[in-house]
Length: 258
Image (cartoon, rainbow, N blue to C red; front, side, top):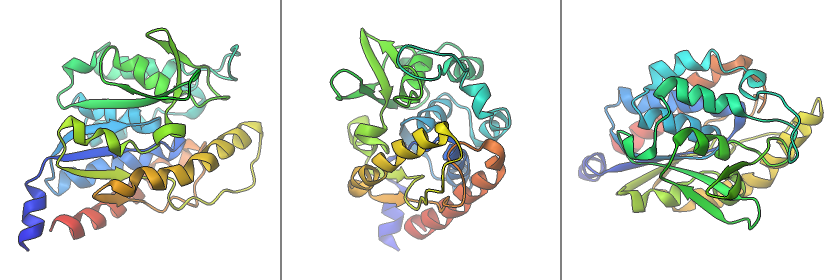
């Protein structure tokens, strides 16, 4: 159909949402784009979506990200330390970004990249598009009350989920003509938490789930893989999550573009 041909020829912007360990599904989404020959012109991300988006923007494709995901144990990434503002420090996620792409700045990305965070003092949305990528990813993954905030430009920044968990709104100004949002929490079912960490994570994502639906309402296409059977903090299901992300994205993208 002509309309689908026209869609394929538009500049596609992709927004990757937060979801802690469920973020492995983003790798499957990127695989579907690759296999269908759909080019991503710009990319944005929040929290674990910021991690995947940053890697992709610097040329780390889904295959390389799949290899990296095997070494993404939650407690390893979340280098445990007591802090003034939260329970944990997430230095290692920044270290992993630097190890993968170098201590890069946004201006050197292969495609436009934007990362969203929240100003802890004002609650305002902060869009990070310049400066050090690793620091931006650390800020975007700093779940308030769980991880300590990251200071950038004199501002204390935390996870952007409370302002825009699936940062679709950034894409148009980045040059996108067609926007796609990946919501990892659209079909979430919250199970009984097993520990304090689970309580904090579940409470946070319960808060932002409804906000995610509002965030994605203006996207041209929203992809919501059913990850309801999987934990936000259990990294043992990476392979299954990647496959679920791939299958749902391939189905949705095929129907929309072909």
